[in-house]
Length: 121
Image 1: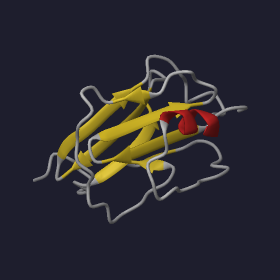
Image 2 (image 1 turned 90 degrees about the horizontal axis):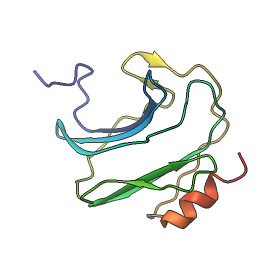
Image 3 (image 1 turned 45 degrees about the horizontal axis):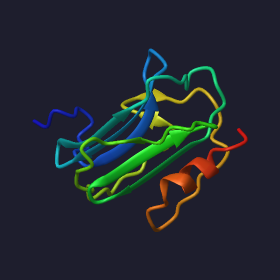
Image 4 (image 1 turned 180 degrees about the horizontal axis):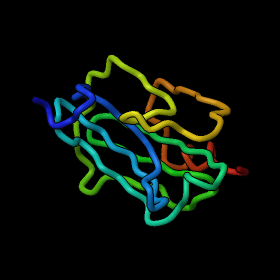
């Protein structure tokens, strides 16, 4: 049995941990390709904007007016063949709020562009 109880061995998700830290994880064929976590932030109580980007061996994200773009170190990892999208839910836990906007760009935006997307929260 796959170690991921939901049965989705290929996935990407961004979420807030119970301690308020924000994390972005990429799982390809049941193994982690990327795990990135903030040192601060609180998705539980703040209205925030999150921007993430990925391409083969290059994963990054930032959030609301943050000068830091969090990346994988070393920058490596594969992109899963995702065939399922879940927005606002992870393993049965649901967002307690409103998703105001979702935008998709079919190319890897630069880290500066990610920061610009999350300005003026």
